[in-house]
Amino acid sequence: MNRSPSIAIVGAGPSGLFSAQALLRAAPGASIDVIEALPVPFGLLRYGVAADHQGTKATIRQLERLFERDGVGFFGAVEIGRTIALSDLRADYDIVVLAAGLSGDRRLGIPGEDLAGVVASGRLTRWLNDHPDEGDPELAGPCAVVVGAGNVALDVARMLLKRGAEFDGSDFSPRKAALIAAAGVENVTILARGSAREVRFDSVLLKEFGRLADLSISVEGVRTEDADGDSGVLGTLLSLAQQRDGSRHLCFRFETVPVAFAGESRLGSLECTAPAGPITLPAQMAVTAIGFQSAATGALPRNLGDHMEIEAGLYRVGWYRHGPRGTIPTARLEGKEVARMASEALSGTAAPADGSKPGRAGLVRRLSANGTSWFDWRSCLRVFEKERALAAEGRVALKLPNRLDFFAVSGVDGSDASRSGPNP
Amino acid sequence: MNVLILHGTETGNAEMLAEEMSGWFDARDGVGHASLADITPSDLDAGTAYLIVCSTYGDGELPGTAKTFHSLLDGSTDLSGVRFAIFGLGDSQYQDTFGLGSKLIEDAMITAGAQALVSRHVHDASGSDLAEDAARIWIETVKDRLHATS
Ligand SMILES: Cc1cc2nc3c(=O)[nH]c(=O)nc-3n(C[C@H](O)[C@H](O)[C@H](O)COP(=O)(O)OP(=O)(O)OC[C@H]3O[C@@H](n4cnc5c(N)ncnc54)[C@H](O)[C@@H]3O)c2cc1C
Ligand SMILES: Cc1cc2nc3c(=O)[nH]c(=O)nc-3n(C[C@H](O)[C@H](O)[C@H](O)COP(=O)(O)O)c2cc1C
Picture 1: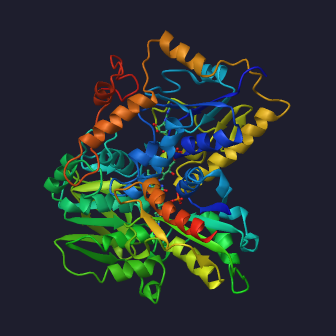
Picture 2: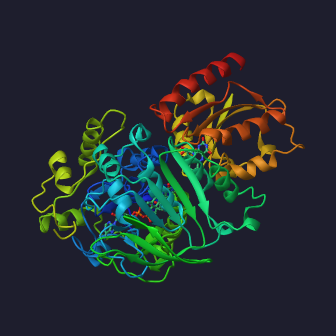
Picture 3: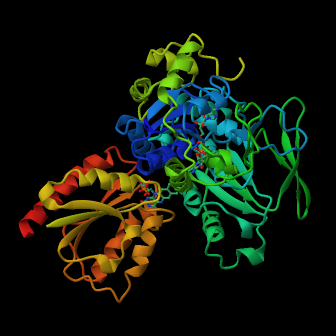
């Protein structure tokens, strides 16, 4: 072997970046590049994890070192499958790891889902996090229903119910906070199909509601036999529901199944069935938070099965591999696993690396040949610096909300900046 | 005098800090770093000072890589003569359980007879300072104690 092996990672979310981190150790001497469709890295750490959970987002500081100190290359605003073909990338790199996530919202599949006022949680949480491809959704009050009983549903409910100084220390856009306040969402119902026994909320997230000023909390559809002496998550929920007066209200409703979104030109209510019979919940706004699937517009192949190794030299990790299960810690463990497999492959007899592939130089050549400018790590740093400088009183940053701003701030040539954005 | 920096982590922040810390010692301190998952309490000896960097996860629980080490620190472990210091990572958004993971380790070490060189410090991920900056200050207090006693 006459050159060090080259590794390309597609997608700069937690699973891609933890893979890079583990590969640095498992394959010392390898040259590693991360290629990301968006201008800047960090995936759902930046565009999913809630804006008021800066402590969780702080894992970004650890991952920045890959580019800052460890010599990992960054190519932002380069979409594999669109800007560069996957086959070309594979021709240039000994190892390719696909870590492209899963951004499509799963649909409920009931009538009225396309009415104005119904929004999917992926779209809404990206908007709440200033993802550059998400414009303002329809926000309306006083009643909002969040369909789904996972942690994303809790994030959404909390962001809709917080006001003013409750966003201190976050990087939540003040303009968006004002839009939510102006929409006048006063009552949020979290709708769970399952029984209260089966709740799988993170109890720490639940307890956060107990700290919101001016919020009362109630539960509906909890069977008396379930409520008795429960000390787990349900116990936490029931003690929160003792809670007090407030001008805003949060209701957890169990064993209720949505059957139709109803309204003339826009959403007015949600028809449901419950053990006691059909019920109609008033709703000017509804958020479906029932999971994710591959986006219809995805540029990479789908449904390949879920083995980590697709074929020699090609691997996949994270939500791209196994669907929307797993958290930031599990992404780290997967990164270690894929690094072990890849380094074994590199040192094995059937090694995909004979040192003849050009790696980074090949990618740069292709990008230059098709006139694509990309965000390197220095361009990203200019973006982050600007975002900190734009922070309003009480906020730690204000994220740039659209692609053109990224190009303007970084000085990267944006004449073809719309290339991997949504259709205008 | 040997120094071994041990980390207990869920998402890697503590491991990164432990690595960073190991660069802050002189060669004469004979410093190394390792995961709590790769060591047992019976490996600890009186000739080495142990600096433990440990986060908190879940609802005030230990991070994944610290669990086994902690469970082995039961009533039968005798760590008398072992010296240690703990730097915790936490997040004050978890109001009721801030820094409890590193406290679990500290309590168990002390119960087993080990001696804390300095008091435990917990860095707050929601605070304004970086963990590295807080750790740099803390580590000076550790070094003062080490060099005073060795
Ligand atoms: C709203 C929300 C909140 C969450 N909150 C938490 C939390 O608080 N704690 C926690 O532990 N977990 C949380 N999670 C889960 C966590 O975010 C995921 O487990 C994790 O981000 C999965 O990582 P990933 O790298 O597989 O995907 P992603 O983070 O989605 O990263 C994939 C990256 O690939 C890029 N990409 C896609 N296609 C291409 C292409 N063709 N070419 C190049 N790049 C491409 C994307 O732009 C993206 O940056 C949350 C998830 C969501 C949706
Ligand atoms: C799901 C989750 C639960 C957490 N629970 C606590 C907690 O109870 N108390 C605390 O002080 N910090 C808590 N934290 C904060 C972590 O300790 C902090 O983010 C730390 O930097 C993680 O370090 P690590 O990457 O080494 O595990 C929690 C973080 C997450 C993401």
